[in-house]
Length: 637
Image (tube, rainbow, N blue to C red; front, side):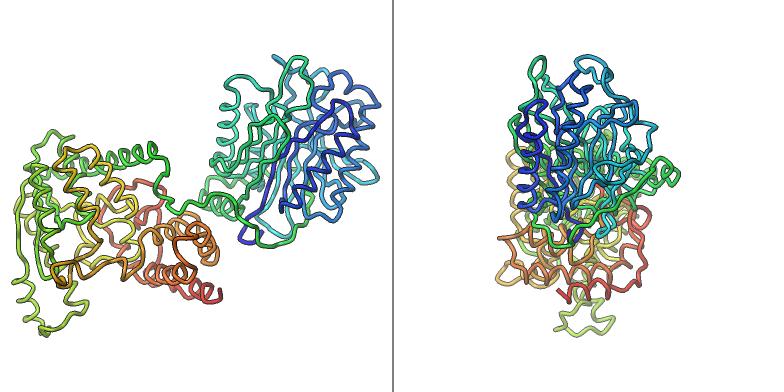
């Protein structure tokens, strides 16, 4: 459970209708198998100790007594096992019979959660036997223990504060007001659902979306387990559907009616962090809906990960989804720029075109915005400003792309102006320091701004989200513009958007865009070597694919450095060794903290995804914050 990871499972077991001893024995086998696999939370089907399809046999005292003996067997089998187990059985209390989930851990029954919404429609006839447990809260002696029966119960883990478990049963999820809402608002980060849902054409997809949607709405993990093979097939066949979801993401699923187990790891630290970020989630008044809390203990140890940790979190792995993402982002970028052009009455847009990825995307967005406005593409001025590091390859690609897109194009050499500036400030001719580099970037920005003034236009910024995170921009140089269309697009996604446009372009433009994609990322501020780019950004600051991974985990979820390192090692295993990952992660934290002052005065630009660094929106951070706490954690690894 280190770093908040908890291995969870949903399991259906071989079942005989009304054979409680057999069902208990099979349940114990499943519990032991789950424990051997490192499972810490296990959910089994609704009424699994008797079978869901017992019908009028539920009213037989013999079956009720057999179910309690089965529960005794299961309870005793959990003694000494580091698990929380949920099993289903009927429980008689007073004059009522309830369809319950028993929460069992380390040889104790922690509580009984009765079903709130008892269906009595269609193929379901539960109201004939069971009462709703909605307003019940009663403690009584059960198998020698004082046990509370109430739907308003939570089960917190004493060893991991972020792990709090709530429970509902089958129809409860399908009802307009599921009990899991109150449970989550009162602190439950995990909801289990013991179910008996029949197999009907199309129902599995609806069921899956219902579970995913509830996990997203409540920022929780939702563990759903339906009865399967072994139930009576007099009128129904049961689905055996097991669904494990976390905050809207499907982590594991089984749709096999045969007995089996779906296993995954959930991240309760991530869920707790997401709730803190969403300040509309907290609602203390809901605590009144919770009647009881019974804690359980689990060892805090490292959980072996099997769940997907996407090494490219900004880029959909599915090709169709990736293309859709690229189109959506282009539309958002163009819509933002379109509004700014219309509002300012700009007569032109000026784009500094280097022949690199970011300026290429900025120009493509500007063309789309002008096309949407019905404006002539000649209202776009693309400017290339060759200097000491410019190569023929990038210059030729910039020139050719501007021609093919039909925009105005100018070449403004800046070497003479920069050399004059060096003389003015007394910079030695052989100096290749940051002054040498940044002077070129600031001269380019001055040229663009002055051209925009002359044309009555605005400068479209080219810098991307990854560069902003690392501060890889010259302050008041390429850092500045009048509208930054790429400001929330990470470098890994910039590549795919440009490739997407290339796929939908004619052969000539496609060839240019593909060559730009094949060009090393570089600011081209140092003289080339043998005509080739001498300054490769990723050699200096590290691979952008790693930095984008770090950025997503740090900003989106607020994970601590040790956890980010662990996730990166897992996601990038076989691509980067541990030392390389650790080296660049330290670089990320150092630069992220040191360079905040550049982000504090960013130009306007549209948000396109869940991670952005705008000081007016998602990320507000003091420019003089210290990174020591974060770096010390990495040094201790």
